[in-house]
Amino acid sequence: MKKIIWKGPCGHEWVSPIHTRSLGHGCPYCVNEAVLPGFNDLASRYPDIAINWSNRNLPVTPDRIYYRTQKKYWWRCHICGNEYYRSPEIILRYQLNCPYCVGTKLAKGMNDLTITHPELTKEWDDEKNDGLTPDMYTKSSKKYIRWKCKYGHTFGLQIRERTKLGKNCFVCEAEYKVALPLFLVIRWMNSAGHKAMVGTKLCEMQVENLYEDVGLAFEHEYFSQQAKMLQLDKQAALREKGIHLEILPKAKDPPETVMQIKALMEKYGIQAQDEPDENNAREDFFRTKDRLLRENIQEREMDTMNEEMKLLLKLLLAQEGETEAGQRTPNKKKLAPEPVSGIDYPPEGKPQPRNEKEYRDNDFSNSRRELYPDHTNNVSSVKAVPIWEKYALTVPEAAAYFHIGETRLRKLIKKDHYANYLIWNGGRVFIKRKLFEEYLDGENDLS
Image (tube, rainbow, N blue to C red):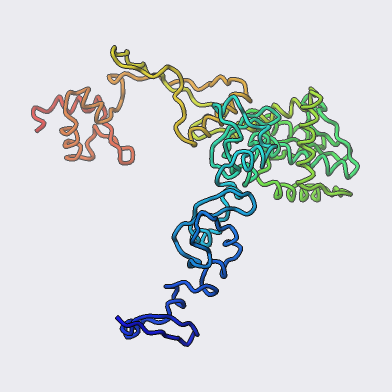
């Protein structure tokens, strides 16, 4: 088959049979069906990528391959010197350069966590990580790890949640959100020249922060319902003395809380020379925690605040299905079946978590157990009523009690929805035991 040299309007020359032109084929370089050095090769289009070309690919060179080919080649990073195997198409589409430099592949001693984030290795909980060490992971790892902050709180987060998302101890963050409104108020009042009377007894009740010269008092909102009621009583008693008690709720959004405190101060006409912001309050809070940790100071006011923080933290850490006090309602213990000989049973104890969600739930529970003393639940179990003493029975209970099949009972219900022995609760039906007994006394055949 004779081939002809062609030259298109683009200026490119190529060789192809005549019949390919009759089929509509044009310049193969313009449609990227062939590689033309200096036009659509990798070296000319993306020299910053071609610089990482590895000699393991020889005799193939970057000026001889299409710049978006899906074929994989070896690359050698000109920064770290590590080699990796990847196609130019993937590199360009996802902007993926050296996986060792970006932290998606591990090279111990170069990009492990001890090198890139040595400050995080101080919070690595060696006891609860089952032999895992920081030099086994990179900053981009999704591995769920247990951490222990310098204040002693144990918590669990993925490595990437700490390195890329900036998440830290959720217990410390919760304590900060509890303390933030009061911190802002104290800084504002100090800037305005008003000094607080801390822990003052007034009306036979203790007031956290009292500013008697302006007739104001401030407390953070208590958690338990009983404490809230006492706080409202305190508010009413102080109002009779001409002192207005402001109850400050926990900060949900710190920047918004700053605006709320500012509006509160303007309401009472208190002007501060230096208005506090959220960043300064955060620094003050953790500086205070550091001082207490370093000097082991046990102050009555700080102890009282910490105890109340713990109560409020229960609200944050409580999961669905828990009681108001943050403790799970005890369930009835099921009797374990007797062991059968010849079967190897797993060792006794709490089953190990199987996935990240179970690990997170366990960490929340462990945090509650470490932070708070055991709580005695006052929820009393309801005594089970014998079936022969119940006023109304469900269909399965009625079938067991009257020795009539459930199918037969449902046919009777369907036959007369408004029988006097039936009672409906939404779409659920109950059978009045005594009235159904009277009905059966008058029947000889239920078919």
